[in-house]
Image (cartoon, rainbow, N blue to C red; front, side):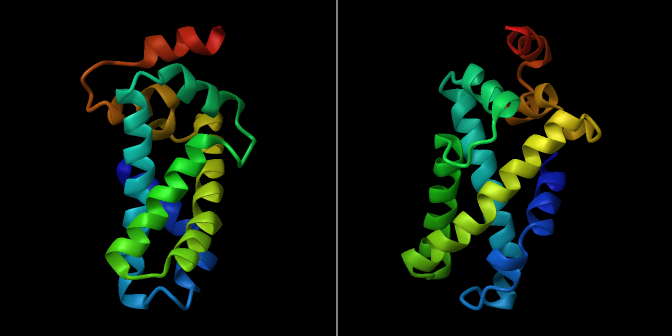
Length: 145
């Protein structure tokens, strides 16, 4: 799943990363990896703080780019661009805003389509929790509610 997420981010990184003059070419893959890890970290944090129901609702009913989940991921990624790559905060936030909402929208589409088994919501959440608990039954129960 994590490799697929990296590829999903990479496929959407054109304007925000690849064609962005403030991000040197030598850092493109690392920056794409930072975007992927920001998504994973925030989703994992949601799980660990008991917000499974909110996560499921996001993937089930999303469509709003102003969602707090997307904002958290965007800010996390912007902070990494600023702290690790020396990109000024305004450019870092602009790059994050250009990439993260698009990737999250694509991730939701992948989750709903059911084509990529790695992105099936129950499977994805189970991997995010380190395979400690199979969350598929819980996801099925909460999706019906």
